[in-house]
Amino acid sequence: MRVIDLGGTVETWLRAPVRPAHVHVVNLEEHPPQTPDWIRAEYGDACALPKDILTSGDYDLVYSNSVLEHVGGHAQRMRFADAVQTLAPRHWVQTPYRYFPIEPHWLFPGFQVLPVNARAQLARYWPLAHSQAGSTEEGMRSVLGTELISRSEMEFYFPDSRVIGERMAGLVKSLIAVKRS
Image (cartoon, rainbow, N blue to C red; front, side, top):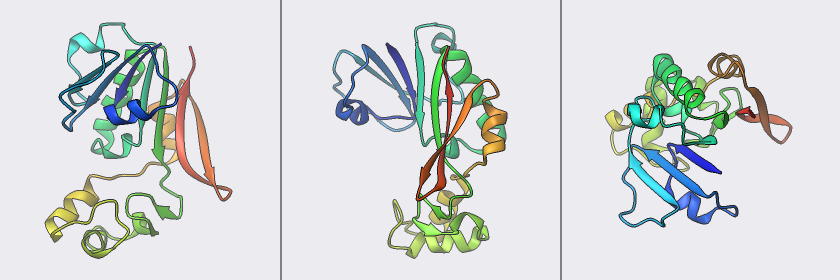
C-alpha cells in the first residue's frame, strides 16, 4: 500500500507496528535529513499541495492524525478535505472532538469553551499543556491555531465518509472520517 500522511512525522512511521510499501509524509515541520527508502518526507502545506502531488494518483490511502484542528479555519479545512478526497480512494482522518470535556492539547477541562483571552493566559501557566506558551502573544497564537470541530462539521467536510466516534470512558473523544473504496 502507498500512503500519504498529511501532517505526520517520519518518526511515527518508523515506530509503527505495520509498515506500508511506501509512505509520503507532508508536514510544515522539518523532517530528519536521512529517511529509509520506503519513506519520502517533504516540507509542505496539506491545504495547498503542489499540483504534481494532487494529480499523481500514486496513493492508496490518505492518513492524517490530529491535524484538521490546526489547519486554520473553515476555508482551510475545506481545502484540506478536498485534498484528502482527491489524493486517494481511501482515507483515515482523525481529529479531537470539540465536545469531549477535556481539551487534548492543554489537558484542561472545558478549555475549548472558555473565552479566547482566558485560554491564552492559561496556555502560559497551565502545567499540563502539550507545550507551554512563553508569552501572552505566543499563548494567543497557540489558542487561535487550534480549533476543535464537531461531528456535523466532520460530516460536512467528508460527506462520502463514515464518521466514527473514538470513545474514552464512554464519551466521544475523537472523530475519524473513514472512506473505503
